[in-house]
Length: 70
Image (cartoon, rainbow, N blue to C red):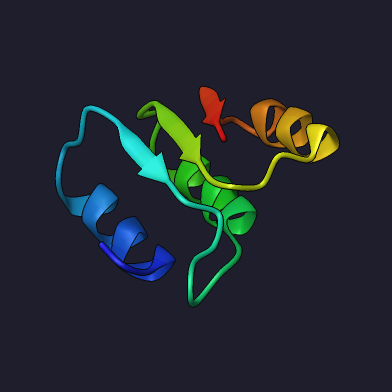
């Protein structure tokens, strides 16, 4: 899907094995989307992004991402 809100709607209604999350979404920051996803599901979330700030990587892993790929 192309937006965080679409992703949240789909995850809530369809069973997924994994979510690949880009941080650069048009409607919400990916970090906020991760927090919202964690509020509704425990499906594994892999962050796939060009952002390589170590502090942000650690924060997102602590916030519930299962892996982070640059």
